[in-house]
Amino acid sequence: MTSATSAPSAAPSAALPPRSLAARLGITSVPRAELRRRYTQHGSKFVTIMGADVHYVDEGHGDAIVMIHGFASSLHTWNRVADELGQTHRVIRLDLPPFGVTGPLRSASGAIETMNLPTYRRFIDTFMQALGIGRATFIGNSLGGLIAWDYAARHRKAVERLVLIDSAGFPMKLPIYIGLFNSALVRASSPWWLPEAIIKSAVRNVYGDPRKIDAATLRRYVEFFHGEGTRAAIGKMVPTLDFSEVDTDMLKTLDVPALVLWGARDRWIPTAHAAEFASRIPGAKSVMYAGLGHIPMEEAPERVMDDLRAFLGAPEAPVAVDISTRRAPA
Image (cartoon, rainbow, N blue to C red; front, side):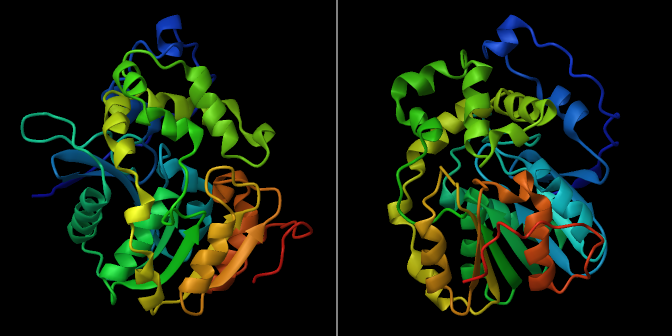
């Protein structure tokens, strides 16, 4: 059963309040109610799916676009891209469990569910059904890219176009900041102690130029990671992230216009995977962004929007775009 409710807009941002020593060390967790108060925004809604109040934003009118973020991120990573696309499209973005405002899925007994690919399949299928979205363009980053192309392979007539941004799917060594959770000691200790300095270091690592990250963005990532139940859920999730078991041959069967975007300074997923996606998806186009990292749409949204406009047929916006460091599409 699902139900949807709207959330009030978040209060205007102010100077960041100091965090206690216990909070900075990750000894305490940020309550879900506090995350909801701080990080819901205009257009925020909640829908009950698989026992969780799932946070999503639904704005604009026109053909639907569904945006799916990556590991330990949130719907906020799409803010600036979504603002522009929302002028010409209906844009839906959500906080995947166990991240963002949504947090972990829980069983009837209250136990945290393990978020593996089969669970994410059930989740995204239920989400789409709950919102009554029969057909949409999917844009996915990292883990969200895997969920997006897997959905396109399983629902042939439900995906209008597909955009993969530094997408997961091919066999790879997990980034060190994620792989830490394969240690039983880290899984046991992280819900009770995980200094924010480690999280900040991980966030800086996904940017091509860490100097672009502002304090409010860093705080958001930290507080979501320190959200109630999130670290325990990540500890259950990471050991299941075995991309060698993902059937990437499904990509060859896709019959949908596809665009592969990638940051040339991605330190989390090998840049060679961009060519793998582009070569396996029939007719896919590819762009490599010089100087950008794992989340180019957050780091330099104006550069990503230049390619999204061309691919989606969106009208040109009056935004100055520096193309001097972009490579031509493959």
